[in-house]
Image 1: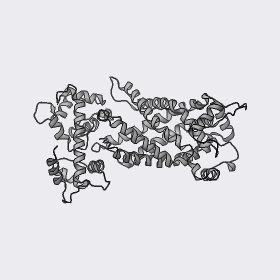
Image 2 (image 1 turned 90 degrees about the vertical axis):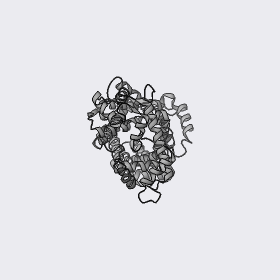
Image 3 (image 1 turned 180 degrees about the vertical axis):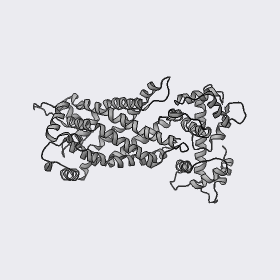
Image 4 (image 1 turned 60 degrees about the vertical axis):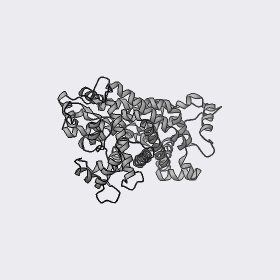
Length: 462
């Protein structure tokens, strides 16, 4: 799209002629042009193109967005165009729908094509594709067919629930690594902000049984940490916690996608139970690989002032005094616990978000509060199911063996017996309070930073 056409379009959208277009002007202007956007969609376009965060688009921002949008549409077009003849026929469109897990009839595909086809030959050229979608806030195959479905009133039932995967466009254009970087950065900032609560949780989990008055609570625990090592001690163990985010996230996503591919081979969309299993396997595989870093995080969080001088010193000390096997202390309850946690977390999040999208077919992007609500509920459900196993894991990780001292270590069963004997069933949830206190701020901070990093990295997740 040349600059002259973009300039003319911008002038038509700029109703008050101030050289800037906000969401209301965008919505009203496009409706005058026959493009029926909702207010949410108009706001989403402004958010994606707004580089200076003033809530409006000037001509430069608008032109940049439109040019990148057209390029992304071309990537999707080429992905669907299997035989590379520059034309989309019914077979190619049906194959693209099938890859998304959407099983439609030939008549339904005809109706889809007729809606875009201007020449009446039951095929779609690049010009027809671009003209139909250029002023729509979509670019991935998923969102394009969501708009298509809404326009042609095709009922695709439960198979309309499409999982959040990296689209072919994102894989081809190289956006996938930027999304992983944005996700890793968001996790790092979120964990750093909530690190004091995380360390407090670990401290409460491993404290020995005793009278109720002698046990630490949230306030007394924070005071204890500050009095022992000063305010900086609240962030002990956060360094290794941040370092393990990138490999943990990348490995979890990799295994999650591979398992889902097995489920969708020659089949339709994965169901809720299969998402649960895929999330569980992904969590177990990623946790097994990065588990030594988990143990280091616990030891560094619990260390006294001067005990370890850093990550490498802690690693060397543990290796010399306890051996290599000590880095996998607590792995078994961790693996057992990751099954309900990762499975329920991913399953509940995807299910809630996709159900919301199905109930709002005219909206392609859930709002901030919807995503925060989905993330908070899914994280809470996962933690409630797996917390006792996480507590057992932490207790096993915290056990140390010193050189020259005979020390019979407890196993998982003996730890459970000790907890039940000293504290009763409620002892299995010790430290749950600070754990829940950090859920909402952690999810909120993670989401905000994720969106900002996507903007900085020029990620366009249409």
